[in-house]
Structure formats: structure tokens, C-alpha cells
Image 1 (tube, helix red, strand yellow):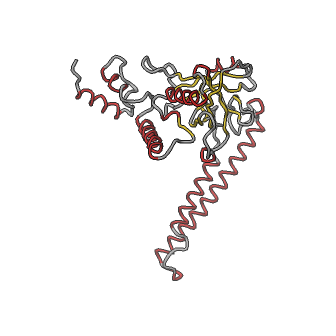
Image 2 (cartoon, helix red, strand yellow):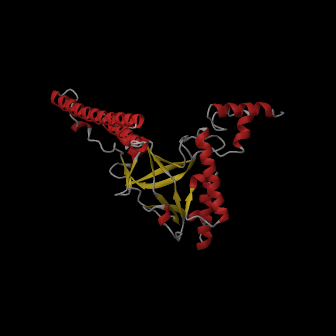
Image 3 (cartoon, one colour):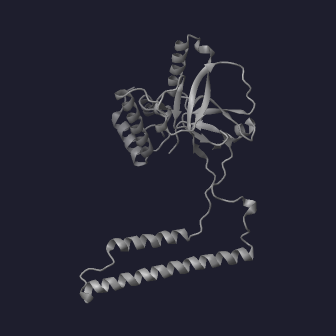
Length: 311
């Protein structure tokens, strides 16, 4: 079957116009899909995010080549992250002269910034850039938690919108804020008009106005900010995806361990958890603490770790 390069270029041009990455909307049985899969890593990012992600991968590998081994590895920057983790297991097995089949992963959360970690771990690797989907992360207790909206009160304790007293107070507050804003805006308008008149007539022997253009812009920005702060807004919704701190992936000898209070959190390449026939998305299970809930709760919730997002 002869490959038509013209149709392939037309297809790629269509993807660019619709802000799609090269392999995000191709037919699984088409020649274009095989062409793209054999040359690109799996992703569902749009074109803009895919380009930034590609440049970040190139930069990460370039620093590794020109320098030395990184202290913290960006696991999402590898086309085959599972093979990298297998290489870490092989290195540990050869170093300690033990069979690789007897090694399993142990996970420790590191609450430090990447720049604060200056030494390599004795065993394993530091991994950065993971995302937690379907749960929040409690740094104080080092466990999973239900992510609540920030800086909001529980729904039961909020005053009713039909309460007359609550409505009256809200109207008074809104009226006072609007009054203050209009007063400031009127003062600014009068100052600007008076200064412009002085500039045109040249009275009082003033060639330039005392109120400069920079002051005008500052006053306008201040008025805009005050106006924005006076608008009532809905609280932020529950966050579905939160960034995870750095995690130490440490190979240890497999021993019987009690999994009570622990959740085997699956790690996927990207939000499309099924992946494709050629490239499954699942990598391995990461053991984390369940917190106040049982592990079955997080299973039903679909809690998982992701290497990359869809945006």
C-alpha cells in the first residue's frame, strides 16, 4: 500500500487549525495513526499544551546529557516511564546482589522543594510532577483526604438566601461599597478634568499637570480593583486534580506487609486510563495512606495518580 504524503500533510494541517495534537483524533486503523504512534509519545493534550510539554521534555533530557544525573526525575518526561523504573530495580538488584524478582517498591513522601534536595537518595529515585485525581492530599497527616472548597463555610452553616435580615444586610453592604466606589471615581474624574484644563489653558504658569499619566493609570487600576473586590462571587468548586509532593521510589525486599489503612493507588500515563491497544496507560500501584476513609471508598471514587494532564 503506497503512502500518500499529500493526504497526510492535509490531515496534519487540519489538526493544527483545530488545535489538536498529531495523534489525538486519528482512526486507530488508519495509516496516519500508525505513522503518528510510531513517532510520538502517547498524549491527549491539545496542540498548544503538547508543544510546551515537548519543549519541556527536550530541556529535561538536554540538561541530563550535558550535565549529570538529575536528583529529582520528572517521570512524565520519559516516553517509556515503566522501563525507567525497571532499570532502577535492576541497578538496585545488581548493587546489593539480590534477585530482581524479590524487590518491590516502597514510597515515601518528601515535603521539600526540588531546590532544597541536594543529595541523591541511598536507594531509589526521587520522582516529581505527579498529580492526584479524585482526592485531596493532607500534608499534615501524609494521607488522602476529601478535598473541600477553600475559604468557604460548610453549607449547613451558611445563612439562607431567603432570610430577610440576611438580605437586608447584603443590600446595605453592597450599597455602601457602590457608594464608596462612585465617590472615588467622581474624585478621580474631577482631578483629571481639572488637570486637563490646566494643561490646555496654561493657567497658573503650569506647563504640565501635577497629575501625570502614570498617576492616572494607577488611579484607574485602583478603581478597577476596588470595583472587582465589590462584586459577589461564587466560591470555588471542589478541585478534582491536585499536585503531589516529591515521592521517593525506593526498591526494598518483598516482605509480608499489612495493607490495612493503605490504598493501592494506580498510576497512569494520562487521564485516558484505558490507554490504547499498543500502549496501556497503567504503570504500577503506589501505596498511600487512606486517612479517615477505607480503601474501598477511594476505589469507588476512582482515585488515581497521573503523570500528565489533558491540558
